[in-house]
Each structure stands twice: as C-alpha cells, then as structure tokens.
Length: 525
Image 1: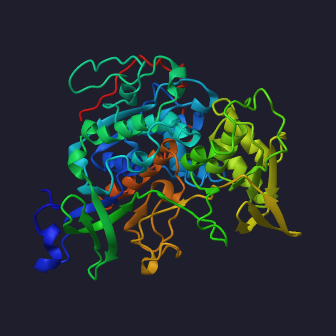
Image 2: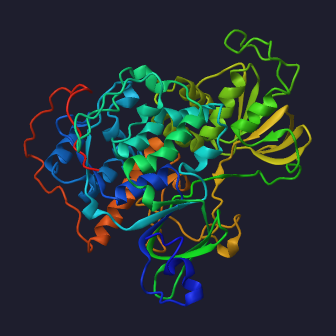
Image 3: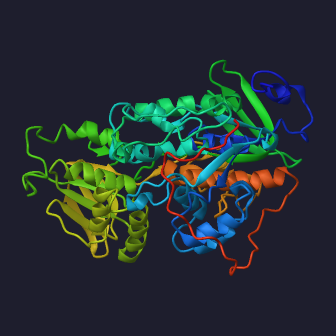
C-alpha cells in the first residue's frame, strides 16, 4: 500500500484516526548508503559466515564457524565488541568490513567470507524516506571531479553492494570483467574483481551516484524507498508511537506516518562554520573540496612545477591555512601540497588528543593502500616533516580580517596572513526534527550509544555519518547491527544465538583461502 499517496497515513491529521496503530513498523529517514543498507537488511536479506572461505583472525573464524548455520542477524556478537573495545567505538562496522573484504588493509585480495540468503518471511515492514534520489549526499558531489574524499569513498562504495551480491558494483565500473549468474535463484561470484588494482581506479562521483540510484531496484527494495519526501517533524505521541510528518516534493502535499521505531540515516549535509568575527562574506574562506578547487585557480600558476619536482616552498605568497584535524582537513592538506603550496595546519586538539585521533585515522587507512593519507597523519602528529607543511597544535581561530587571521594560542593571540583559509571542521545534519526548538545550532536532544540506539529512547536509532560512520566501508556493519536489534524485537523479543561452546572445542584448521572464482552465493532474492 502506497500510504504516502493515499490511505490513512497521508490524511491522518485531517481524519482524526486513532494513533495507537502504526502505518508501518519502522521508518528510515534518509535514502543514502546507510538508509539503503538498513532497508536491505530489514527486507530479509541476511548474511551468513562462510567457513570454507574463512577469516584471517583465528578467534573470529572459530566463533563464527560454531554458529555457521545462524545468520549474523541472529547471532549475539557482543564478544567482538569486547575484543575491539579499545580499537573501535562501534565494532560492528569493523567486523562486517573484515568479513566482506578479508585482509584488504594488508593489500591482499581475499574473497568475501559472507554468503547471503533472502527470506521475505523475515522482512520487517518499513519505509525509507529521502528528499533526494537514492544515494543521498552522493547526488550533491561535484559530478566530474573525484576529490580525494570522494575518491576514498569511491574506492569503497562497492561495499554497499555486499548487502546483496545480486547487484555487484563492478557492473558500473568500465573495464571490469563480470561473469554471469550460473542459474536462476543462485548468484555466482559475478562481482569478482579480475584485477585488484582496478578497484582503485579513479571514478567521478557521478558513477557512484548512478549506482546508488539503481541499487534499490536491483536488490528488490524499490517499493520501500520513497524519494522526494522531506521530513519536517518527528515527535512522540501519547501512545508511544513516533509521528513522522513531512511534505512530498512533487505534489507539495503533506503526509504523516505513525511507526513504532525510527532509524535516522540523514547523514551530514551542512558544513559547519567557524562562527567567528570576519568569517561571514569573506571570499577567501572555503568549506568544501569543491570550493577549494574553484578558488585554487585564483592563487596558483598552472605552469608552476608540482611539489613532486619542486618541494621548496615559495615565500612570496602567504600559506593556505587549513583548520581541522579530520579526514576532510587531511584532504585539503594533500590537495594544496600536491600543487606546491605552503600549508599552515591549525588544530584545536592538544598533542595527547591529536595522537589519539590521528592514530585512529591511521588504523583505518593502512600505509599500503593509502600512503598519501598515512603520511599526512604522520605530519599531523609531528612524526614527519615537510618543507611545505607547518602545524599549529592547541590553537583555535579567534577572528578573521580579510586575509589575516587571529589565532588564540597558549601564549596569547598571534596574527597570520593567508591566501586561502579552508575550514574543514566537519558537517552537521540538516534534519532538525530531533533538536529542541528546531534550532540546528542547539545540542541534540538524543545521544546514541555503541549500539546506535538512543540512550533516551530505545525506539530511536541513528546510523551513518551522523554517528561517526563516515564511509560506506564501515557504515554497513552498523546498519546490520541496527537491523539485528529491530528484527529480534519484531519477532517477539527473540534472544540472539549465543556462542556457548567451550573454548577448548576443536575447530578444524582453516584451509587456504578459496580463490575468488570458486564457490556460489546462494541467494533467492
């Protein structure tokens, strides 16, 4: 039933219907990678561990082999959270990542250790609402320019396809050879990459956006995805339901849905501001890689040699000041240094805080696969030096005056000149439905724990970049964790299967990893 176009859900407020019966069990707000992944899991597409393919971690292999007949959706995986307590804030993203592409950070091609089964009888009724076309923020990226941040995501965007191998991402990558499914009802390794180096071919964001738009239809969830719907309000009813209100873009008609649970997959779409005097209206301040690219032509000579051939900085022009200590800041640093420009990197964290955050970033991006990022993280910690790079730690921007910036340091205020200032301090959600008074600058009303569930209300979840899972590579595991909790509750509060076998139980040793062309993935969707 299309309850966004007809029926009681669309006219509930006008008709005064009862508010103790939901229109659907779950509403997912956001149709980007996170929202689509949640929908696939809730549609009954569940992953199983394939012990024949194995896992590089012996403990993970032993535990998952003992429960191989149960899907990961049905297993109690808290043991992995304890195992990864110090390495990851939310461990399920890492577990899924190592299962989907074992040993990838070591630069080794191992086939996925997952097999997939689709069981429509276990689907949880839900709807996915999104203002854009499927893909969310991917539709807003510069379609032609593969910035380093977009490239980083592009390298891993095929992880979304791991939710169901029926639609391998390689179908959208020119030059990759694809083997057809051997028979109806089963899917072979049709997405297997023939040349591992092709995985890192640079593709513009438009290719990724096209894949995202096609994904719902190919995996069979298009009937659940309602694009062109903007959610304007989210509130709790006296009966304990969530009332989700919004507007349909095409018709301008309002809609209202009642649901038991809500999953926020809205992402972070709005750039944060420095919020200091002199910032507003300053044409030399940029916030995105696209803006930095556009402004860079105004201060660089296209005939000048690159940093690789001329690493000596020019003292005739002031540096580009990059503010921030995350991946977007690293992106800006790389972009400038590759063009032979001096960079002054301003970070608010002190040395101790910076070591912890940089170490966490370095753990996600191995030196073998991402040497450029790894080197920037080393520069940020002061473990490497470069003629074009200067760092300022425990410093914050206090005021901006045209091409000068006042920096607050421990020793007072210091003035610096700049050619461009890149404020790479993160993004915030444009969805203000859970913020008090509708003020987007206020603190969120809800906080989300390691299980992605709101500490203040167990019927509210949040996945994706809004809770720190910024890359498709890691967010799918978080979506699986949310689906695991929702499926268990929907099926009457069923207990997850616990690995209770004695640790001394002998599990046959792993054989060598199967070649990527061997074996079948049994999928009935």
